[in-house]
Length: 569
Image 1 (cartoon, one colour):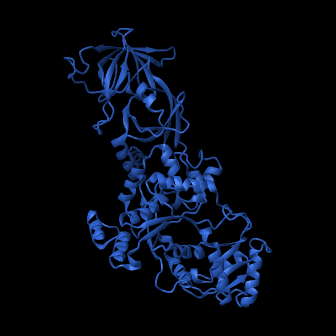
Image 2: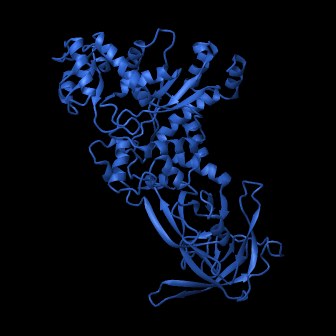
Image 3: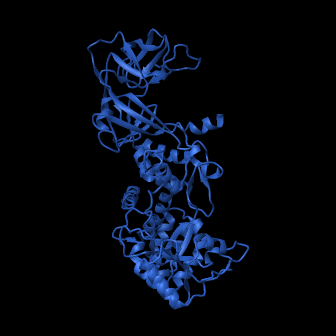
C-alpha cells in the first residue's frame, strides 16, 4: 500500500493498537512496505467465536491495509487432527466473509526444513536427545524463582544425539521414550528457555504426510519458523503467547540473516459469559452426548452459531464493539445477543407464528369466507414490500395472550375486553369454552367489521394488539427454543467444580404443533432465511427442516430478559 493510501485508511476510523503498529511499520517502509499476516488454526476441533476474533484481526488488518493473509493449518499433532476439522475451518472463515485466495499452507509443508534445522542445531551442539519421561523433565524445570536442573543426558556428543534423533525418526523407539530438546539455559528467568522440547515421537499416521515422519515438531519450534518460511511480517496472536515470543525469536534467528523477522503482536482473547472456550471441554461435551454435536446451536462454535441463525455481520459487529486490548476481560453474552438482534432486526422477514395455540371462533364472521389481509414484510427494509395473509372465522392466538381473571394492567384478551388482531380486525371476547377438567379449549369472540385497514373504524384505538394465524390455513411446525448453555456466568472461574455440573438444564426446549402462516412456511423452504416471529423472537429454519416437516431454531428472543431474571434470582 502506498503511503498516501495508508494515510487515507487511517482517516476512515480510529485504529486499534495492533492496527497502529501495522500502520506505523508500513509508513516507515519496514519489510519493503509489505504486509502479510496469517491465521494458524490447529485442525483438532471446530472453531469457536474466540477464533472468530482472531480471524477478524488477521484477515481484517491485511484487508484494511492492502496486504495478504495466509491460512496455515498447524498440523503438528496427527493424534488429534482430522480432515473434517480442516474442511470446517475453511467453511467458517468463508462464512465470516474472508478469503485466503491461493495462500493455504500447512505446518507439515515445512517438516523437511524444520527437520534439517533440528539436525543442524544438533551438529552445532545446540540440541540434544533426552531419555527422561515428561514427568521427570517437568520436575527438573524448576520454578520462576528457582533455576532448573540440567538433564543427565544434556552433555551427549553431537554424534550420539544425531544418531539417536535419526533412529527416533526411523521408528526404533517407543512414543514417549525420547524427545529432542534445545540446549539453551536451565536457569533462564523465562521458563520457556529452559531447554524446551523441539520434537517428540508420534507413530500415528499424519493426514497429509502419512507415515513419512515418526517425529513431529512442537508448536514452539514450528510456529515461528513457519511464519519465517512464509514471509509473514506480522504474527498476531493472543496474550498467552507473550512469554513464548523470545523463544520464537531465538529459533528464527537461527534461520535469519537479521534483515527480516516476523513481528509478533499480542491482543486479549475473547472470553464470553455463560460458556466455555476450551476446545478440550467442547470436545468432551460432543463426545459425551451432552450436546448434539459441534454445530449444536447452544455451542459457541462458529458452525453452531451459524445453525442457530446468527449472521456473520452480527459476529463481526460484536467483535468490533468489544475491540482489541492488552487486558483480559469477560465479555457479556448479552452484548453478543444485542449485536445479533440488531442485525436481524434489519434483515429478518416479519411473519406470524403461534407457539402455544388457543382456538378462537369469531361467531359473527361468515363460515365460508376467507379474505387476504396485507402484512408488512419488514418495516426496516423499504424494498421488502408487503405479503398477504389469510383471515377466516377460526384463528389461533397465543394461550398466554388470554386471561380469564386478568390483573389490572393486562392489555391482552379477557372476557368482555377488546384487542386488535395485527393487520386485521378488532375482536371482543364473548364466551370462554372449557373441557370437563376446567381447561380452556376455545374462545368465542365477535369482530367489528369496520375496523380493517381502509374502513371507517380502522383508526379506532384499543390497548392490545395480538398476533394470530388462520386455523384453516395454518402450517404445523416444530420450534427449538435455545438458551444459555451454562447456568453459571463464568464456568472457567469455578475451578473446584466439574464444568458439566454447571450446564443449564433448560438450555433447550422443543415445542411441537406450532401454527405458522402459509407465507412463512413457503419461505422457510429456503435454508438460512431469517424470520422475526412477531412478538416472539427471531427464528431460522434448522438443517433438519424439510418441506413436509418444518423445524425452526429460535436464534434469539426479541428482548434480553436473561439478565433481569438472574438479578431477580
